Length: 344
Image (cartoon, rainbow, N blue to C red):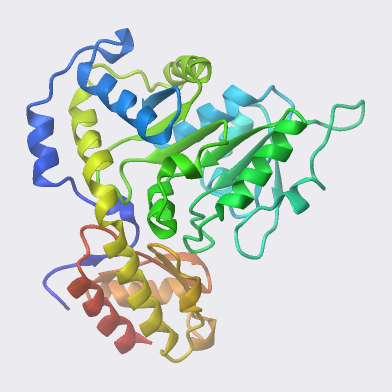
């Protein structure tokens, strides 16, 4: 067993950098519920500028950001279209139903990418017999599809067609900066036509806490009320925003390192017995590989990895999930390959 644990379960395990800790210690603060925290106000203004949106809202979690977005765009009793493996559907405790009063209408995709040709088959208008579509949600990058990135023309087509029939589009962009790195474009180009977009400061960008929701000034003003209803009204939150500003300004520059490490892992895994993975489909920092050929369940493989100083997660009984991040160097990932090769 190694002395140091290599944790590749998720990019949520990242710890704030020294620069973030220093900024947090010296942050200028006020009461954010009153709109008086200067550091938090600066973070929201800067995020809006970077995304080309009118306004932004800081929230504790990505789940809260998605929950608020759904509530902004829908009425009780409507349907929300999303991918069948989306975070919104599987990992957010049915908040679409619990808070927004809506039904999820999932669409199964082979690659995690929703396309208008499939979406339009599920779009419904109001009638005496069925619930109308209130919102379309897309996830970019798509977590459970292995960090796949939406082509920009696909996003734009969905937005154009949805808007033409009066339906809004929300992007769960928890890792949208990873998508921007992969495409080598600014996030503003990716999110140009969606009505709202959220992203996480606390994943690949390395901040300790927080996500952002962006959209029109009117939408974000409404969202601020829903944040309070959900218990997200914070006081001297500038301490958190100080780290968020560094995450926003500095950390996107290094995401390519995580992508390179993920590709290295995928290439090595593709040569291991009993493993099924196509390295060419690893776009960003998420590696999901099928271990059914080993005859061992993914949970047991995860346990064996842990016993050898490597932490990984499971996506289902046959798939293991690895996520690279700023706290895992290339040497750490090389060590992870050694552990996986020993086990597999």
